Length: 202
Picture (cartoon, rainbow, N blue to C red):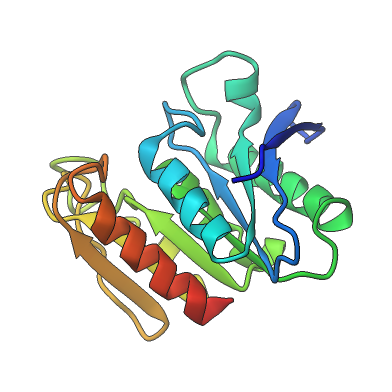
């Protein structure tokens, strides 16, 4: 696989960092964000990036400004969303002109991608381990964030994820795999789900 180029991108809430891998002749790009306390090296993010590149798609893995600044506690949702929108807009103007963009991420990053799907012009949203509700608090559901997306959505969710199991919808595919929120138990099932969905969307 080609090596990633690291780009620092100004946002309204400080610099973000994009790890960009361009694939020759790519027909689209997949832009993915990390979880609340994690980074772009999360195994499921790396796996999704590998799948995308094998499907002849370019990839950008995005570090939010709070992570670039060395903080582990995530910024408020509005700041995450504004930074994400700024990053995708920059990438559309520079590295990825005139190609369709799939946005997504794991956990918190998936939530950001859902909330901003319309603003980023995403043609699809890839959600790895979407945190439907805080553990043990099913009444505090975030289903509305998924329901608000009008483009195709893939949710890959561990069967025993304490953050819950989202419901499928008219344009939303939910694939249940072995394991929990880390999505480490069945890498092949994750790989297959992402590959099949990307081949349909792009």
